[in-house]
Image (cartoon, rainbow, N blue to C red; front, side):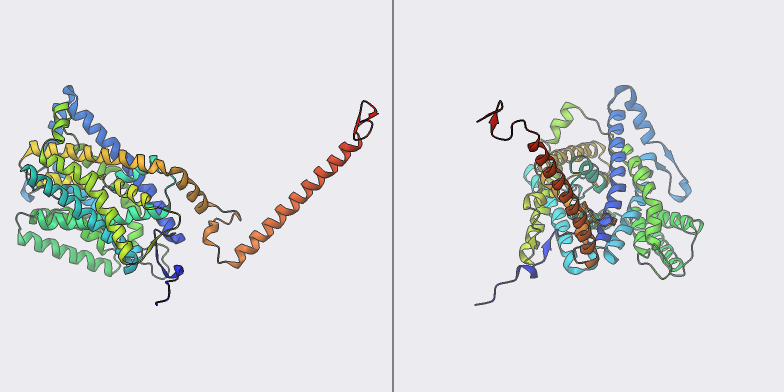
Length: 480
């Protein structure tokens, strides 16, 4: 009979993060949350602008206003510039995040990387399958199979900031890592499935530009005046090659060094991400949302979301497919790697986070434009379905997370407790003898204070008994 497996030998799923990783996640989530709020404001503004009769024409006019050097193939509309130009900044930051996860984050260790990678893959495959089956059954177009596969991390974290302020850091980190992997596969989908034509001369120029970009980084050349013009040339060549221009952003992000060298406090990637992320979260993505989310919202249009196979497939893919895919992938990974869930959490918590990942916005809207190019009516309807599905996913996640919010609050308080006031949460110092010596001194001082208070109260009680007229046990001066 084999010896029973020791509980200590089993890996914990969603166990406590290391302190440096927790600090990084907290800083990143803070920035993404602000970006998500701006994204939400931009989306609401677009909906109002596009649906008020007096303003609707101006929204269309501005969105279709063309500018840019036509000789270079860049005479684009405002909406086109937002989707292909500004989103390249977003994907540049996504490339840096992915490189950081691969080099210094959770994805650098195969055992730790298995969970978010499998969960992300299942979270993309199942929505695509749900969409495809829905459209095969309803005789709709299967071109939009990739629309519900993406998770919008900024939007999801903005919702999380409102409804799940005390969510354990391990679950927040899982959502963030999941979204990074999700972005990678979304980029691959765009590059492989939405490239209709290839201009090999322009593509070769873009590759040569990327090689120069890499060599300059290797040589340690610094200065934005070198890299920004080069990046613009690479982007323009990539756009004219037929490959989606955002791929240029991701490629350059992946080339940055994410490790520190002697004398460096921060790596180049960390410095550049710190500078570019506000531009991405505060300008690029909100402007894309402003000129992409302006769809007509009427009673008939909303009703059509649940009757047309293309739009119904998107809604079901985001709400049902994402949740089942991510939860199922996580459970299967834990089951077959013999890992156990953290003692502080339940599978219901994982299900709630999986439902939150059903908020697909930025990349889903981009893919809807690529999937149904030339059919403006269907593109608008699919965009409305993306908004509807994201809203339903947000509501479902709100309900599920609120049910366990009291439990999360206790876990968060435990993670943040710092009784010795040294700036490091006590939970990370359990193996440090110096911490226990400090705590022993604190407890001794507290015990001495409690003994002093108890002695004072006992003295007051004795003094009070001595002042009772007639002595204890007498009534009105007579023996009881």
